[in-house]
Length: 366
Image (cartoon, rainbow, N blue to C red; front, side, top):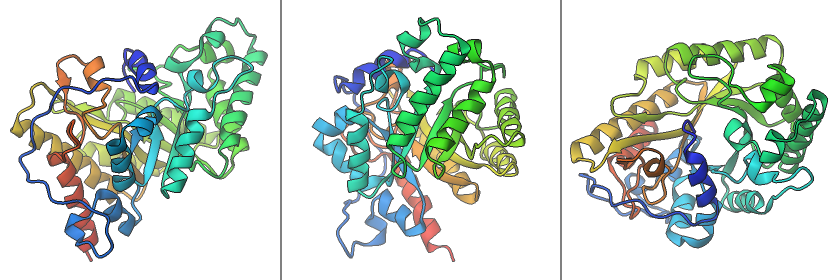
């Protein structure tokens, strides 16, 4: 995620104490019945069934606390998605709360839940400056000590889920908006090579996992995207085991990359031998949202999804949440909301239907 204020929200929601957001505007498109019964007409299939028919990965961030107590949330996750991303349950400060202590209960729950539902899991994230635990930030460790802490953490986490998590965001948001490396305890103590080490440690722990660098505002073309491109190009040239780039896409109606820019960026990354995942998409709207704004939001979702599916290197489309009932947006961006494809009663919005239209078109095309 881009904004630091979300840290408090993420920690709160991890304990399932979040509050529903305000009501959203009703979609202008009538809601068809959705079921996964055998023999169901293709037009009424949920997103997951349509995506499975084409071998397409479509998913969302999920929160274990909510999975445990909201049956509607859990049913929707199982029905609509074939890949899941933990919201906070695999972040450093959540998993590794003290130097000699790991907490895997919630991450184990999520991985088990996904396996039982025949869903893939993207691990998120091994390093993010907003989730460096206090014991690391204040520990005054030497360079060598911090390298060993990094090695231990990645070995413990990636090794625990070897063969069960197909991809990892190894380094999250390591670049500032101006293109420089972000000032973190890892950069200050180890130097820029902390990124190389993190990818190497992750590869050693699970050689079959697909390893990503993940960032925001690097989706189109511009200074931030160029900086990310330069970083991953350098990693590839030095034979660091990086496999892909995650493009987040936390956008608005007025600030989002064009389909042409997104396509061009994916193509240049693919020429480096990298794959791309859309990793955290949402489209926030001013409140109260109008029907026209919901339609404009849907068009952005459609453009991104179609662009991803048109590029061979883009191999997953994942949103940062799917229902307005549980959303980080309202806490971080006062006055904004309605960022997801289902409203706060789980009713599909226009954005949901355009994703279905894209999948239906993919199925019907020769």
